[in-house]
Image (cartoon, rainbow, N blue to C red; front, side, top):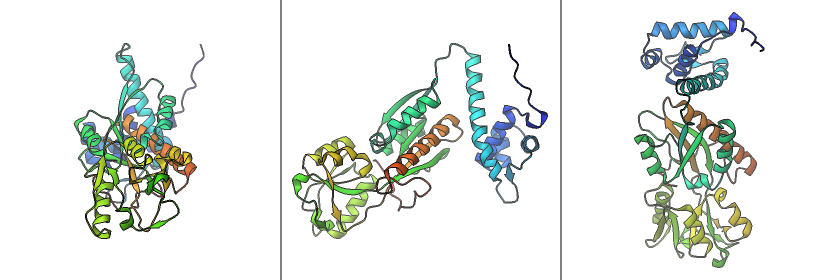
Length: 329
């Protein structure tokens, strides 16, 4: 049997040191990291110093009030997270050989389900072949309640969450456009918001960000109150509007097939609508959920680059639109 080559003393490390590195990168505070790992601040400092000596680089900048990663530290963090996660998986498997494969519970809004989630599911299977995923499709409000309750590990939704112990990762933004069926004969016209009030309006669920924006828009532009038909199902909205029931504000990213089949078309309206932000949220310290969230970010970025800025905006340029408030898309 062949032997593994022995690592030189300059690159030897252990999982405890790498775990300390990962937590200090997240918390940016020696005291909080020490409390999290049930050790002392001196112990944390010693472990980081050992890693820096092993690699021959500085991992953190300690000159500011908060410790921050150096450029080398940012590169090292991605590897350290993977090594720590693999170490945890190895420990679980060896401690109980009969343990079933792990399960990650993911909540996803329909706007993502109808765009790039199938690509993400394939990537998760390739990256984590032993991992099972359970997918729940719901509104943002309900998904985030389940995340806080611990019944979901990761939610891909449309609003930054401010609950304690929850972290957020920007994924992308979807531009929004007014759409209608060719049956309404609105194609080619330049419309005002008041013109749209003559047709039944179809919107995402009441109290969602898009619905609130819609109400504000028509309260200013329309001479009389308008009736908005609210639905929690994106698929139902698409079907209803394609049948000619009324007009709706939707992301073109989720109606590519309908646009191609000419069952829906984009309207030209003299009013801008905020982009729809897409956010991955997970509990602090849930490394697997965070890694899958980063995989989602890469998937959304590739989708945006392939489709163009009229369809999706990658995270580097995203999160620039006005805040929605509470979303249910």
